[in-house]
Amino acid sequence: MKSPAISIAYFLMLTLACKNQDQQPIKAKPETRSLITANTHLIKQDKQMIEKYIERHGYSMQTTNTGLYYMIYEHGHGAKVTTDDEVLFDYTLSLLDGSICYESGTSGPKSFIVGRSESESGLHEGMLLLREGDKARFILPPHLAFGLYGDNEKIPMRAVIVYDIWLKKVRKSG
Image (tube, rainbow, N blue to C red; front, top):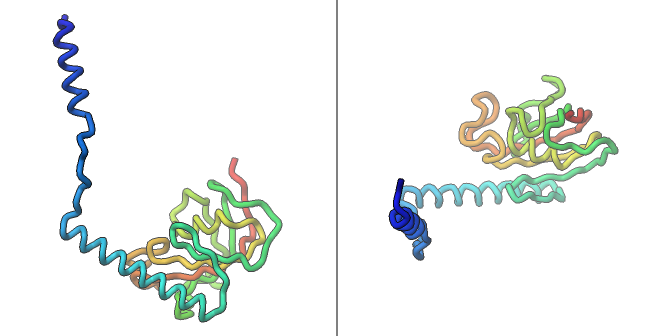
């Protein structure tokens, strides 16, 4: 059995060891700083390209905190999309230069489960803004789309993509 003095001493050591002692912020290593600088520059560059595209087309779009640009140009009257719903939609996926990469006219409607399926994170986020019957346009910067590598088929590396979507069906979860 431990003596009370040892228990108290142990408790005091733990308390003092865990106490916040005016810690200085962790400084990034030089290589980390250069990556942060490069990424910041790329994000600004993407934003400028997207904003020029929006201005050139005369779109009135909103932006989420993650950088997703969106506009709902025709409102439906169906169910609002929530996480775990299965969505079925017609779409055209293109690049900022207008090149069409994929479309439901050739490959059929697309469907996935919001929040759970492997699809672009920006598409999941955008779907949560819609209700059945909506027609919308999403512009996804690379970090919300196919990232650094594209899709190794029709979407190049670091591509900004544009989705035109008609949400045809929302199957509620549960």
